[in-house]
Length: 309
Length: 319
Image 1 (spheres, rainbow over the protein chains, first blue to last red):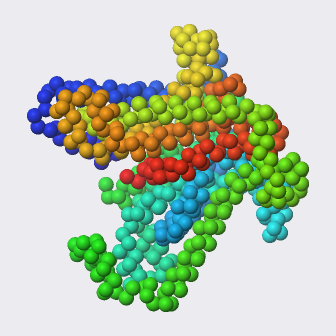
Image 2 (image 1 turned 90 degrees about the vertical axis):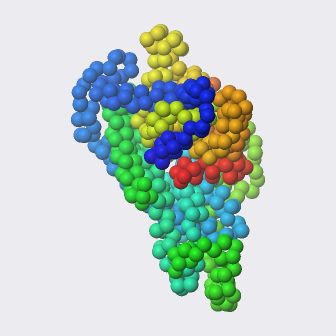
Image 3 (image 1 turned 90 degrees about the horizontal axis):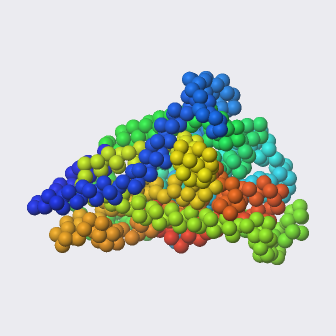
């Protein structure tokens, strides 16, 4: 951000500009950015303020909101379903993010070796990212189908594992959802790593070759450290994305069984659009907002410290 | 070793030659050649295995969509169906109007593209190239809004649509009717432009030559003409990238259309799919046919315009 600001400020005015043309530039600057500015103020900025205000009220859409102080937050603190939703988000972050980052990194390095078929591999690995999450979830719903007809059970049956009810078992549902999360999120991370790898000097590897380093040593001692900024970026965006998992849960499990897979976004949806408790739901939104602002802040600090800006 | 190498300002093509001469090239020794072959094989196996894992669910979707009812009833049907029943797609269309759903999603995607091209590009250009005092502030504001998760503001956004004054039977205070709920307004207006698309477009505009703008000004061209006719043609690949992302956002959107539409005429494909699943009692062949209809357009677009998609996704982070 700071770099961008500096860039805007540092473009010096050319000599001998007429004042009227400078004024025209100013006016058009405003006019051209105004629609976008108004749009974001109306649909994002204003709603943030409204959400914070509503979180201190009781509101069911039909009757006007009634101020209720911190009652919503107090209830939230004692709401075990909310806490387990938060816990599921955290478990997903802790499990899905590192695993998918590691796989994506290995794949990116493998795709960077100049294999002739690499663009095919890249296309296939990235396909889940361009597909709507609802469609992805629908496919996996069918893969996880109970009994011997589900593809998951069929494949595991080959190695002698007996069929499970993946999405209706309280112990298996969350891991099953996380497998889909990993499967779907590898592609984007891989692409970001691939782009970052373009910036790693091949001379580093040549030097390591001369020193007799093997592939694994080169991976850990050159590739991983050189990709640190990319890793921080991927880490931050995927933590944020994980906290916003919704479509997957909505289609695969509806948060069940017995809230075993519910997440904050799903609880917001249930409270607001099934129970019409808008105040309570916005209190959850505010908590989500705070969590993500903190994550973003921390990640910017971390990225800043490695970028040196 | 590496830094030593970098300190000498050797021309690039020359330096590779020098390296070959000074160091024994690893490829020349036979044992290293074999090692190289093995590592290639390992790479192939790894990438092929992951690719299979990525593609299998999609293949399973298509295979299920064209499976015969008899095969679907079998306990262990062959992975690839013996006969391909493309009429399953027609059966799916009879069971639920997927063509209407797809049309609606297409309209939303196309509308997103048009409005983003106008309002996103105008803001991106203004923030990249026009000097006015508020520019850094507006840009900082847009970056800040990118941090706001949609789920944090979905309720106020919904209420805004619901109580939109003077629409859908609402009075000036937004009471009495249903506002923008179940209307094209609610489906199209909130997605008109996104901070992210402005951010991307600004990145593309920043690297265009400012001299062109100055020259056009000296020629007496007006500011909007300079934007549309002089500078925007310079960033055509960038425009395509943002257009593709805008279309994808419209086509793949789920929660917002789910909340603001109730009638079947306005249902989008992702919502239609989800509703069909609940109503159809999991007829997997038809459900997978519908899923194929919802997934394939984006996959085709991606395969055709892969370069531009990648450009956009990668630009989302690394400058």
